[in-house]
Image: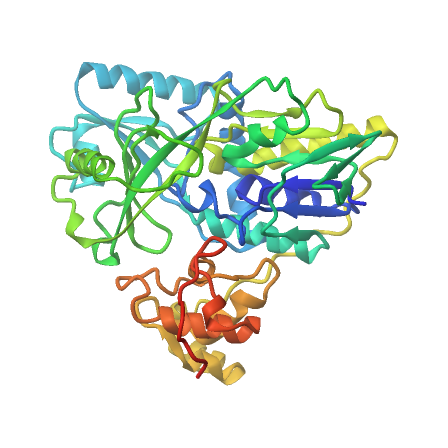
Length: 478
């Protein structure tokens, strides 16, 4: 029997698992996809918001402010990329100035450090490529960029290193409570459940409570990703003024030197992540209003993600009326920014439940030990590269020329806990296929490495979700 089952291996579920793995608990993470971070966590703006936007008296506001401040230590512990580059919300005219002032005042109530409203000359010094009509901006120096999928992957890996279990390709279709315990899918017994199922959190809760008090209405956001040649276009995260639909279009550097542009915001069905001409056109027009010379011809990928819009208007993080069942639902933006604080809050709820049961959560198992960092061959000096090749000759085999990824890096990504099992899973972890050619040259090589390391035929290697086979028919092993 497990002490806790966490449903959903997105960034919230993963960080909850990582935090609880510090205690002597039997933990299981259940994920319906064939990898972690396959939902909203893999397809969003990848921003750590400073925290001035969500209302100061909301859970979203409080946890955004708290979560942002936790990222430096968390990045050091889990070894994922994180850079504080600051953000600018751009405005023109009296209406925008009023909106920026409200954001500024809200941020002060949340104790967001360093907020300033800058004048026209200052913002154009900071961002020479923005449209000259912008008159002012709200500057937030603590905003940052990261790789959200790597945060989740690192957290799951860390939790598994501490003894947690991960069960992939498992959709939760039945939850029954018998006495003080839960039975999931007729086979998995646990003392408690943490529901972190993203856009399906209401569906999961409905399995145990027919009188559910909230609903999730997904909203899709579509994006452009520009080649690294566009690097330097902007120095900070640029926002337009927010509207009722969200924070508006952003233009921002990514953690690896690309430029990301988006999103829009449209109501869709759950898991509907198609991109559309109309949606991308809107994103494009909004981007050109901010940066008229935005080089959209350097686009190398378009994608979309679906975020969980709760009927309550705020995060839902609480023990439900079913004792031992915790909902972590409606985690829309700034969910990534708030995720470390969400995990801390859930830890407190779990502790309270254990105290009520008379089974204290107990002391932490050990002083936290940092996750083993990935070796990024492309970032090494020549001397370091020679040393790495001497230690593992497979570093001499460059698989992805665009991103300078070696065979040794790919093998390591496959064999870690929570390791890659798909072509996109390898891409998310160590970036083959993330460059200009988008896997056109390295893709077949990665497929061959996956097949060899997993002991499967190349026809069985999947692109992403279950059944998305890269190859079909007539393929022979070398």
